[in-house]
Image (tube, rainbow over all chains, first blue to last red):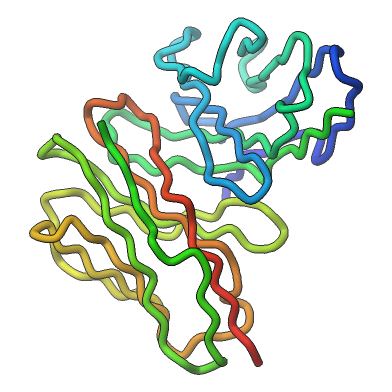
Length: 115
Length: 115
């Protein structure tokens, strides 16, 4: 069964450094997402992406964050200058087709630890 | 605005017991979708079920069943004859037409199945 893959599984970064989290969505999917889960808390929406542009973003997704689809397969989340509070599990997801009824399939997540 | 409430933070049962996880949602839309995801200790998010607001039929899949009641805005999840491998955090999520494709998650219920 097709999967969303995320790399790396764990990223440790010094505060203030830039970090790029990578995702390969399911190949025929059209919509891509990033979510964040701070340890022990709920999963929170960050951003959705369709047709090479951001379609929606949350208040968490401030100017420090950016997303990109640099080629036909990868979807990246960049945090420009990391803060301690950026430590979390970051999930990439993708969904296919039109309409809201397509389930979002999640990758295994990248655990980001900011020191 | 949409909201999902999972009032049960933690549940412990003994293997083979049945257990029901509650989910109550709020939305102004008449068209919306409800989901359950499982997050095992390894951290990934696993899609379990999608339900649209026009289909109130209950669904059964093996030991899993879901009870959707629009009158009480609830979408409860029952595991029959629980097993140790069912131990995980279970998230209920809502997607309505007002939120593009942004999933709103509940805070999750930690289910522990004891041998």
